[in-house]
Length: 365
Image 1 (cartoon, rainbow, N blue to C red):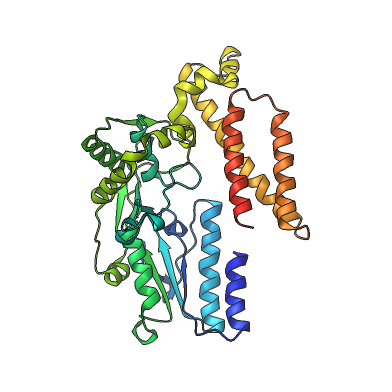
Image 2: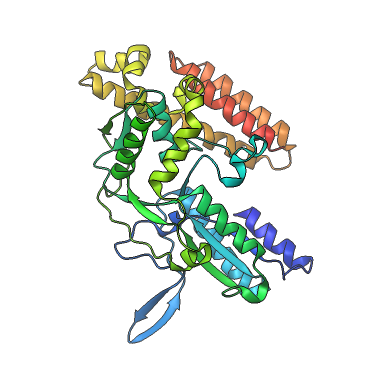
């Protein structure tokens, strides 16, 4: 949030308010309303009066709520500083590359399939490649907005090169989505495409640890964005087929990083190896092998989340300490703390997460 404010104030204070500011926020700012999501504002009626208002922030997570604040700050920046704003609310983006990145390996697109930075479609595909089932939480009938990497990049490119007098307006919201898809449909499609490449996998349903409507039928307007890119160019099935084409040669690499999947995917291995669930089951805390696996998954998830939170907090509360020193101290304290806790074989899994976090923070220096 602060970075967005710094940017708009920097443009204002340096007399650069004619700069077209394009920010990708997220469709997550909308939450899961029981009505079609508009592309931009909504009309509100109250006591026989009506007016157009920004869409309310109904985000379902703290991350998405920060994006709601970004959207509000951008709207205010346009109102007060007259900065032209394109607020691109990006859906779940899938794809291993674009036409341009496939032409030269030196500009190969990044492909994340881990819990923190990967998206569900990538993780499902990676699980299929590694020989694991596709794990759907609960019924999986809830629809989520998706867009291919190709269609996402196309829209941002067109916005960047559009002349000022050709823009729709000086503050425009785009719903960067081509189609809402249910999680179970997505999983089934990925499983079907996987068989074309010799990967046999099944869709399996797991207990949903999230508090969400598993049957929510999202409807979202996207006419403005569809017109911008000239319509969808890559269907979900086509995009997933391209993903498997890219992953086929990376099977062993993906298997070597199987600990990056959701913990529930490895439940059998975790139950066999992890001391904590076995102890819990022995003490009557878990009634079955499956309950122990679920407990292990939730425990690992909580530890990992606390790691992210603690490292972020530690770098915030000491703003006057050099950033690299502060982060290194935070890292050392977390390692010392977790080293003093008996967590059996999960130590290696948690340290893997720590290493990823440490490298991410250092690379940002």
